[in-house]
Image 1 (cartoon, rainbow, N blue to C red):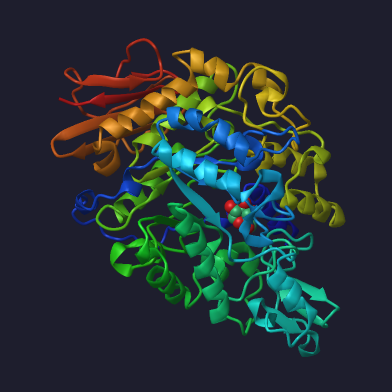
Image 2 (image 1 turned 180 degrees about the vertical axis):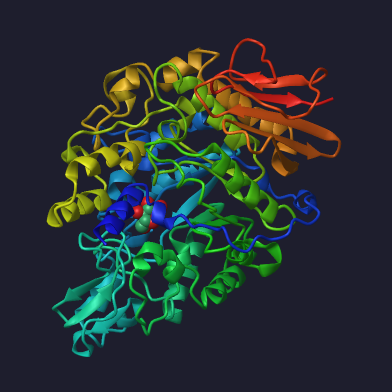
Length: 581
Ligand code: GLC
């Protein structure tokens, strides 16, 4: 049990339990082209995720803010991205960095005002960039007025906005909490002698979606922001919103596989169809859910256009592969290939390997040693920008920012990390091992301030940053990379431009080559007579690749080395994109 919980937090440091394994139910590949005939702006977009707390501080309080983002809109534009996904900026006591919302129609004070928001949105739209906001409605903050009312008495009209279990019924059946210090999702509240449910922290009580008033509130919140002109929602922890409110007992050990029990519970599809009817169908927007259920069928049921539900979901099992000791490239290829073929004829995928719930891309999936950091970072960017699906790219990865690897627990700010530290202490866990694990996987590694330039605090703030700046900012920063034509940053810009110029990279059929090659990921993308070959060496050693394709007439469109490549023998972390003739 202890081992389970320990490994849970190791994952949890990167929120991996939200990552759904979809190994079952392979859907037979049909035509492999029909998605191409159904063109949409959000399929052709590159989504750039901005973590506002760490992006740019304008007022010296050490916390990034909207005015900071506004000052960097030209930078964002220069990346060639189309959509910004902004992590929550709503009023929040910040137990979980904004994922605990106390007012869904207001801006967090640290981040600025509604006027700043309007200016930011206009600035994005003026530059042709769309904005997707995070919608966190599996739970609210315990400081939301709804919860305050709900807590106050058993007869409050808001009581049923949340899940309460009166204590005279005895203790409810166990539910696992991801963030709680004891992993107990039921918190006893003496005020009304009852327990409330929180899948995440105690300050994040779960909303009761069975209550039509709650659903109506959510629809109205969505309309409020869409009427302001935003372009979509990323729906946080959405697969968990529906619950069996009789709270039956789960079999012993269920917490090892809790998503199977928590994810996609009936009648979640009714709830989403209702949102589609009431909200989505009335706007030109995109929607993407965190979590895609337990199978390809689950994922299809969420995103297939004829279902009238969502546009995309996160298919996350790949992101969970990275371990301190490394990962299997063959496995990574298998996962992406399975997902691609399951969605080749219907539905649409999200492509990503990092976000605010993960440590840094290059530190987890690449190699952040001085020798290979740039090469492997460029190679991973090449991968993300050449797969079929909408790429979600996390801010700072375009610079090849790396894990900070704190030694001291006090440097970490992340609520589940700190709670799990306490939990491990309580149960006599292996603290040394725990701290080592955090260095690899804790999501705070991905939340250190954006490295703008070589001045104090990487140009992020004139004050004291809310979390330490990575000391390598004098070497790794946007200003220096902007001037260097070979930098990760300029390489990323070339990739987004290439994707824009080559719709084959968006819609084209994907075919894997040399699939058992333990180091190289090779594939083609093909659309309407155009065919690209992508070769990626995922290792620090030279690697041979056997694609069986004659490339003597091929044109190299992009290469992360400055000298010509040998298509059969790739250099360490080499990435090359050919156009085949
Ligand atoms: C999602 C978010 C994560 C947050 C959690 C609780 O997984 O991505 O950052 O902590 O939900 O809202």
